[in-house]
Length: 208
Image (tube, rainbow, N blue to C red; front, side, top):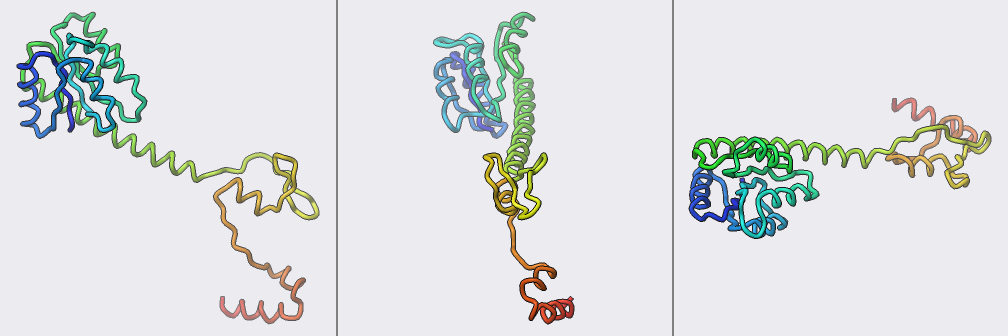
C-alpha cells in the first residue's frame, strides 16, 4: 500500500516510516498540512493517509476535509494521529471524515494493526468500485424499449418522438442494442418469387 505520513515532528515521521516499511508498504512523507494536501492532489496519490492533528500551514482536520471533498469512487483511508484524545476531539475528527484515530503516544503494534485494517478496507472498497464500474458499463450497452409504440396498420412503420415515421428496424436499432440480419420468410418468398419458392423451401427443409 502507498501511504502518506503527514507530521511536523521528524522523529514521529521516521518511526512511523520504519514501522510501515517493515510491513512492506511504500511511504511518502509530508512535514506540514499544506504539503500533505499538495501530495493528495497528485494523480497517483497515496490511498492511505496518516495525519497528525496539529501541523503548521494546515492542520490535520483541514487536510481531512479537503481529502473528503475529492471526487473519487475510491476515497482514501484517513487515520488521525493526535494527542487530542478527549471524546469531543475524537468525535470532531470522525465527523470531518477520518476513518480512524490513534492517540499519542501510541503503541507500534497498535499502529500497525490499525493500518492493516485500513489496507483491508481499501482492498474491499477497490473490489466494490470495480464491480460498480463493470455494472455501469454493462448498463450503458442496454437500452430498453418501453411504453406503447404507434405503428401503422398498413405499412408497419413506427412514429418516432419527432412525429416522423420510420421502418421498424430503424426505430429498434436506435432504441436498443439489437442488430438485424435480413432474410425472407416463406410467405414472402412465395409472394415475391413464386417460380422458385417451392424449390428453395424444399431444399431448406431437406437441410433441417
